[in-house]
Image (tube, rainbow, N blue to C red; front, side, top):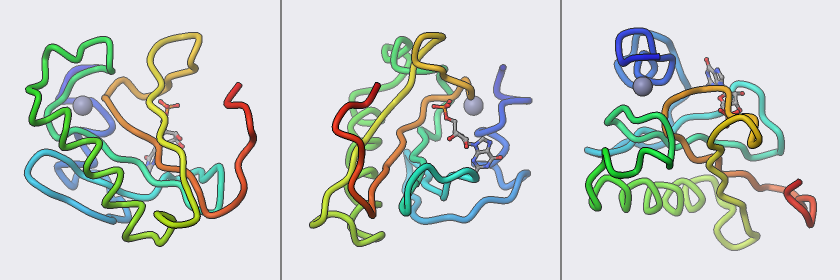
Amino acid sequence: AHMEDCLFCKIIRGEIPSRKIYEDEDTYAFYDIHPQAKVHALVVSKRHTTDLAHHSELSDRELAACLRACAKVAELLNVAESGYRVVSNRGENACQTVGHLHFHVIGGEKLAERMA
Ligand code: 5GP
Ligand code: ZN
């Protein structure tokens, strides 16, 4: 999907509603529509790129901003102390469904020991 019809680009532009948690110059964070745990947020890069395999399309600053935003979201949602998991799916084997770089921030309860 290119930027015009990319789901997360539409969410960033406000064309599709979302429940915002945090925003800065490089990132936007909102609640996942199908939470897989008591806390499940998504952090997306404002610059469109498909996934981590395309990391060279983002600056070091933009990439770092994504991780910092994950940590910020964890603080805002009160799971920084209790613990959380950050996941970014890329490609078929990871079951990526949205082709815009995003990081899941998952917590609020004890998670499975293994991720797969
Ligand atoms: P992926 O499977 O690509 O790693 O993650 C995509 C995530 O986006 C899924 O967890 C899915 O629930 C979430 N998602 C898909 N469409 C929407 C939407 O329209 N709004 C929100 N808030 N989340 C969505
Ligand atoms: Zn996009």
